Length: 128
Ligand SMILES: [Zn+2]
Image 1 (tube, rainbow, N blue to C red):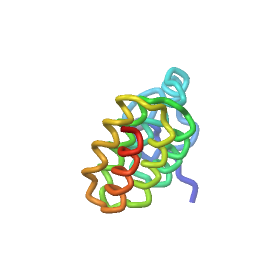
Image 2 (image 1 turned 90 degrees about the vertical axis):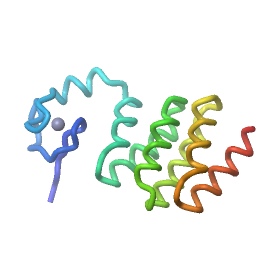
Image 3 (image 1 turned 90 degrees about the horizontal axis):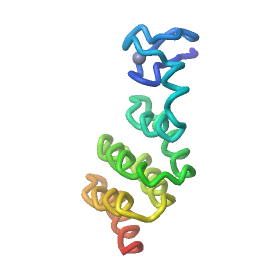
Image 4 (image 1 turned 60 degrees about the horizontal axis):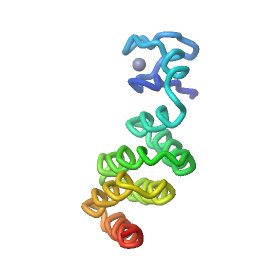
């Protein structure tokens, strides 16, 4: 089965529609006007874990410090997903040093998963 989803509201939609039947927004215009890293940050809210994981792995290579906060939020939104949490820590680790990165790690030392908390603390110790 080949599913297609609105990148804005994540509803399942027919392939090739210009406006999403669910949220009514023009998908093509949004994709054209939103920078790639902005679309990746938005994709962190996607309910499908494989889409989120793709965005996490891509953001690790995008070098945008402002991705750190949304990445941390994503990890906290899925407290039992340790694999995703560790991938997010790895992505944050690749981002440029700065306030966003430090604050994101400070959030993740509160993560419900022990492995994520420990790794976040190690990375935080490393940058302080
Ligand atoms: Zn939509």
